[in-house]
Length: 507
Image 1: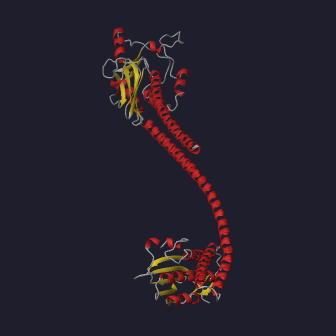
Image 2: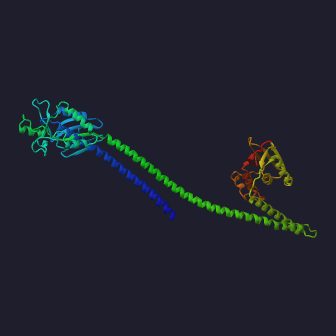
Image 3: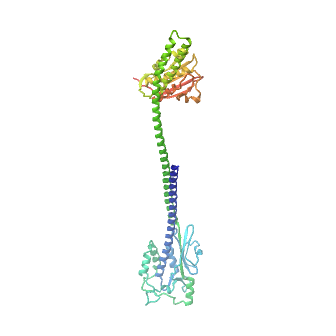
């Protein structure tokens, strides 16, 4: 229970860290987007401030030609960056403009406003620049006029209504402190002063002498420059937002991989710890079973001595001349049961004995003949016909273990078939490096569902079997690196096939 709580705590911490990183990156993305928008707005304000400074510095007798102003603004417009710029009066009329305003002039009220669209942002900067539009005598090219109070400098007490020249320190600092606007100032100055003669002193501003005061005030209201409206493209904001979004996505993706990897690592560590614990327990159990196996093998070995004594006494009693028939019959029964127990003990000892393979070169056909001769009594008693077929081959194997495996397989076949049956022993080569041997009988065969179980200890389908003969065969086969299988023998019977016998090199 404590372990599960700890795992839940670890996964919870990882999930919280992942959510925290997502929240952090989301907030950072919005901050970058706001910063990009603010930078764009500040740039628009800087442009309007710079344009206002340059316009005021180029006034002659209170007027500027509208044609010259729009020409300068046109040079300033760059689609995709600065889409449009306009000078607005106090009543919202467009006095001079350049570029595309996209109908933005209808979206503003009397307060400073920023209006965002899908691809543009329109900024109105409420700065009373003191520039006004009026008309010349021919009424065809209305100039921009400056109001008297806007060009009164507080420090010029001896010259009221006069304006410091454009290279005044205050104005020069304002222009130079705006980053990235050197080209803007250069463009406007080049256009505006191209037709003027050099500055020759402080100009006097005020109502033009040819206009009446009432007419001048009316024109100030209608044509006076009240503010700038600048329409900027938001491509830079979109690009900056897109780049930052990709960066945040990569960070979140890597964080997700790290969290998932950490989670899997923790889970694998947990499973590894559990497997190590199981391996330790399995090792302890294996050691215990090995000790029990040795103890059982020793007990079986020591049990054979009393059995031999019992067998000898029963044999002596059965051979006494004055023994009654009943005593002799029971003595023979003791001999039979003693022999059965002895066989079982011998097979158990063989099964529990470690298999140490000592390979030598031997003739497989010769080994088969020796084993059949050793089983000659059982073969004759049951009238079994033995057929040896195939090519003679030489293999590398432990001679004693191979003979024991062949003995058990032949004995199993003799016990399975009826009297007068046939057993075939077939040997041959699978390929240039490996051979095989098959023990075929015509007995009842082995059902398909039991062909794997017959190699388990103490599993037998025969009444007189012990269930260890085939288990010993499998031990010997596995110790050599061979493979044994039980197959069907048509029309009836079974085939026990040992494959992958390593052929001995020819000398």
